[in-house]
Image: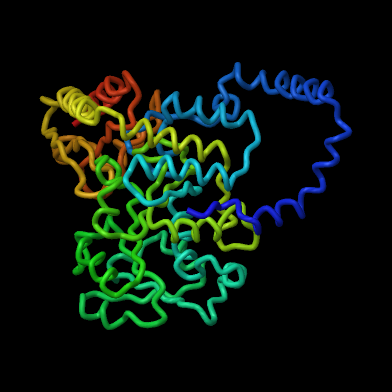
Length: 418
């Protein structure tokens, strides 16, 4: 693979690097002294509870890996790797290439790129298909005159994040059937996009969609942001024939929350890199990813592929049972274990009750958990239903017992008041 830190990149870097000469006037002793003062100044924060100081109230995450709720808690190994990466300066292009090769080898992809979230991966993937490695085109977008500028979606696959694709200046063409899709493909088509979460709603299924794209010679991109676990999904869509696959790095993989992962063909991943940070005047420049996030996500992927996933699943099942047993026997309360079909595909618990027997609404239940001590957030579900959904896979050790106790207390209080 051609090095991303090519002559053009070096030239741009050196042209803007004259400020480095200013450091020549600083002795190593003065630099060490400055670093010591900075470390001492920052020490007061490390010994305090930062969220308490900011008056931001943390919570027990019984909801899942939602971005609004700060997604996951990184393993200590990931935090340690990020801290180590922060201590020295490196070339971001060189680091991206090295980390990408490591990740690609772990998941069975030709190449990989760490991005600043899955939405950024969608922007870079689209730009790669529209602009390629052409510097003039990279600078020109979102003006796509003279370029392939259409991305085909199934109508049921439009979603709140397709703005990340439209940011490149493309037009989204909606289709519903295979015949419509094949008719919509033209010399303007840059990309065929598939939203994995919407697979059950679309008339063209995942495998068929990839086959159509391959037959037409058009790159295909699948958004699988929250679709790990299961672990095999990291390689499944590449094997299925998708040219580009986008994941969130801060959900099931448990990397930095502000990281994403783009997998796929070497030439497309190379083009995606050129269309983003640290390259100036590009559509993806806004999505900067730092050395800490690159190393952090690489470490998270390494940990994830080596994890004992069966043991982890058994622990989730244990926690679901513990919480379910805690509310069993309360008047009219029923529980149900379920696994979402796609996204957050892990054991969950649903707690249901008869609203005529318990004076409790779904909103009241959520409010009581949120306003109590400790604060607990649960999975969003239909507000009109007397049903509370609890996710256990982001719980920290011992928090399952706290969630069980709090849910039982609220239900018993409502039963007593009925």
